[in-house]
Amino acid sequence: MTKYTLQVGGMACSMCEAHVNNAVRKAFPVKKVSSSHTKKQMVILSEQPLDEEALRSAIGSTGYTVGSISSEPYEKRGLFSFGK
Figure 1 (cartoon, rainbow, N blue to C red):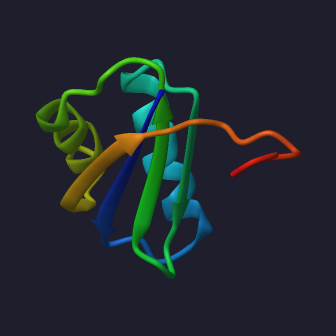
Figure 2 (cartoon, rainbow, N blue to C red):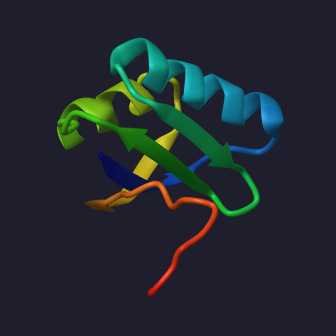
């Protein structure tokens, strides 16, 4: 699984967050997507690699701007982590 962190400009409220989240869910089979207008950030968890240009396009079509996109491997952590 991969965690994508995007900087998204133009979000001003929770309805803006919902708008960009829905655009991503509609365009990609993601596991989880959440946004924060205060942090100007979106986090996406996906089992499949996402095409960054298609991601920019899907969000851009809603009227918001995408800045940097970073990705990293994501592993769900268990309740107890022994030896780590």
